[in-house]
Length: 130
Image 1: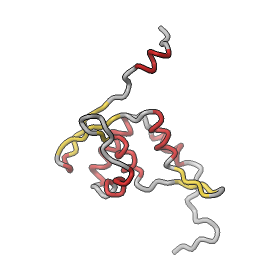
Image 2: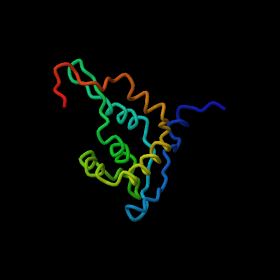
Image 3: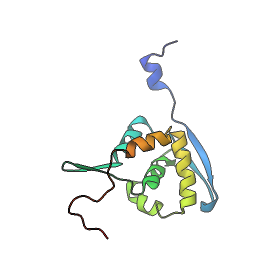
Image 4: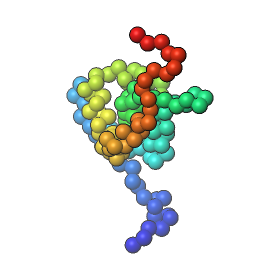
């Protein structure tokens, strides 16, 4: 049976999952990203200045986790100003929550590789290193 427009738009397809985080003393509730939220997250991984484009992997895990953790009422718990502080949490705990976010949202290793390919990590001309 083919779905109608209304059936698609009315479908309740955003799931949540509670994940234990013993390092933080309890559980967190994660919510799937919407298509718009995922596109925004992926776009945040690229910075463009003039005609130059570079990767933006700073706090990559914390940025995703901040978008996925929700309150019991389903509201996003963190705002963009919280990402730096969230990034200071233990790598083990943050990694566990990130892995669950990645799994829930269908981010494969291939997706991450595609988002980061084509960028040259070598210093640009005229840069000072070392």
